[in-house]
Length: 568
Ligand code: PPS
Image (cartoon, rainbow, N blue to C red; front, side):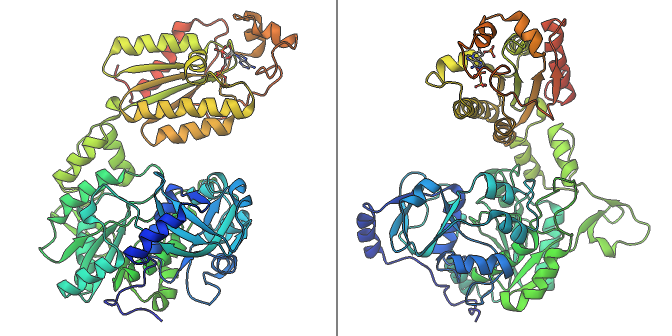
């Protein structure tokens, strides 16, 4: 049975007094440090955003949700909300036990009474929930490469909400929003889900949608976790604030939703509907390719453009919310106004700027016309996305010992410093091992830790607008990929494979290490007794055999110019 919109939705919190007592008692329980995604899930479990869930899914509920979008009791729920933990932690917990769930600072947010512990079949979960077991899907990648191997399920006792220091006044629980709608007399509310900045076309379409549904409008952006590479939520919220003034007074409100999206297209649309229903909305805008994850590893879309609308329509009654079709709005030059794409007067000139084109214009510092967006929004975007030539980036050299990485890296550093404008930091293999990684050896595990440390420092430098030059061997593809992902969240990553053949490196043997390795005096030596996985997709490949260093460094400079990262 669906809830009347203005009645409170059940929460999982205990009273303040019980929470204080529970918190003390819970100090002795085994505790699990929640991941960023689990904190988002827990918040929505506790505040009723995920009603009717009462905790992390049990195995029976999980099986039902994965197979046919239904909990074991038959109620509709499309997304597995599971507590994934490491095998090591799982060994210390048995069904029947309580565990404390802590945030990143160690604050106890809730108690999970564990009823189920199982090892899920992740291939099946990927196929059934996301439609493909393909790592190009961000949630499938998360499932296989970030989530723990074991799931724990059971009811939650909520102690306190996760603490947010940002935009507090804009965050509302489902019951706070319901109370607001009641107070304002809003009996019909259309929700607009978004993870992108709003431009004029969005403002037009949301306003029209609300008018057509004779409803008020809730701009309900996701600020938990969105698609990797999205514009950060701080910037987006400042942009949303700027757009709010464009709606007629008291027709529209905005509230931030701490949801961790999965980009699961059709299933995600149904999930978003249930969440909006819990927040007291009566309608939701579902667009083309709602919560789409982008292209699969074959370069095809994961879902059809209207799959989400179709699935939503099929379940709309059960969700208890009406779908409002998203109509693509385009700018008609002669009329100087926006029209739904299917109502454009014949023979007129239609203008549009795609997301890719917008990013290009921001990157290259080009004009963004007023008909497309609001000046305040553009100003915010320019503040956080300066043109590429002003952003931080990382040049990551990889190659065998003695291949010439450090020498080229040093020459490149000097050339970039000569140009000026951005601070340059060199993280050379040997130097890093002296300062950052002095306790590490050369096992796979230690090499991975070493490279991830370099990646972390480089990502911080990149984030803060500097240039990081890294020059480790970095022999493993997966680790290089992890570093790339870490850095691309903030700026460009240029992988340069210094592909000098091993025969040449060994002939040079500048440090005498190859000789020692051949004699077996150094174990696990890259290229001799340890692997080097050749990069398949480096941005640049150089070979220092018979080529001078200056020339190689110049090739890197040309690549950086071509990518718009430096100006000649
Ligand atoms: S890794 O794999 O990326 O963590 O290696 P890295 O930190 O770049 O360290 C490589 C430098 O350490 C010296 N060295 C070895 N290299 C490879 N294998 C073994 N077993 C080894 N033992 C010591 C070597 O001088 C490397 O420096 P470069 O500058 O690459 O020649």
